[in-house]
Image 1 (cartoon, rainbow over the protein chains, first blue to last red):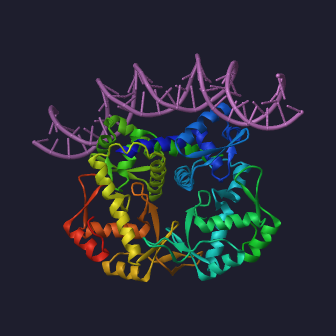
Image 2 (cartoon, protein in one colour; image 1 turned 180 degrees about the vertical axis):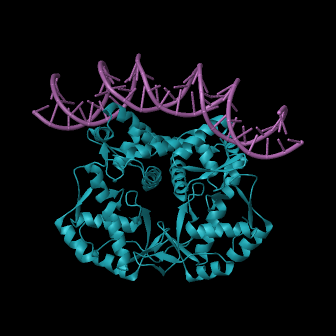
Length: 237
Length: 237
DNA sequence: GAAATGGTTCGGCCAAGGCCGAAGCCTTGC
DNA sequence: GCAAGGCTTCGGCCTTGGCCGAACCATTTC
């Protein structure tokens, strides 16, 4: 089979601890330099450089030169979804040693970005709240935004494209759909897809949440607390 | 990060050519013996045995003893989705050498099973037809079955569960949703999720398609040709 | 019970590849 | 121009892990 070699190549690229750490760090969608990535992966810059060269050659990562820095980011949403799905399988297969979860892990479990949307306890709570308030409906396969939900998103000023792909001949207005994404820490779905992305962006721009240090973890601001409670009826996130 | 090691382990399990070949073969959802898998992966049985032990230990594969045979299958739909997503990235990153595609590749591109649903040219044509006939609507994130579609599936006798997860307190009738899955050979979406699964099953039980030899490739029977034309208005698959 | 067949375990060989120190390249800043 | 900092390339070390031959175990069949 022709595609088999490429498959193994991609998978093995993600299968090295050093590279896995770097990909993990890139999962929040931001662009990082080789040295930063070396730091999070616990390897020297020259080793990281080699790995990054492989990742870019394999099409998982793209680089962008800027001055004397080279910024690396995930090459596409497809790569992010792939990493997501691997994390899901990994989470399912390793329920071992809950022995010690460090503070960083705790922060990540509370709230984090997952490429372009929110995950962790906050992400799941948000999805739950939208379902409970009748603003979205979720099944295991997909989700749909209800009229109430569309109104809410409109009120918040989210830019959502309700267009649906039509076979040939142009587009047509249709229902807004969203993608559920099983959370590896909570084992419950959170919101991904265009709705998840738009919502996440809005939370940042509105100042409801902000990144912790330079990690994927996010913290809810007092303003966010208030708005999550008033708008979504979420308590104590 | 605690989960990082598990991530790398899972990814590297899929990253070996031998194991990748076996996983690839298991993608149609059937259970195969170690020797059969050794054959498709081009390795000796004892090597395959070792690999399979790793795969089961890693939670990607489950075994089922039956007489002197041990049947191996993918451990969960999550694993299948993971493999799917890796294939997608691999297909995107390796547009090299379209040089020579063997006859087996051609058959796979025409029609194949993808864990529990249909893919390849047939799968995409089916999805296109359903969209064109107004029976489903697809966006990049998700899909929805229209009233017309529900009527069709009902007429075909598909067992579909229209229940939607509600937050707490029981379930509620809702819209039937489905998951689009980007086809790695066609680069266009086909139908996955519960709708894709039910449709695929029906095609087999109704005798519209059948497996070629012992591969993932499927062939359309004359009866299938007729029904695809009459019911879905698909010509010449 | 002996032969056959599917499957696994053991041991040793070997290539692939990760790792880092040292050195070199390139851009920026003084 | 010179120094500093980000990054890569090179060379050599060393572990990891895939691979197969051979022997071993288990189930079925005659």
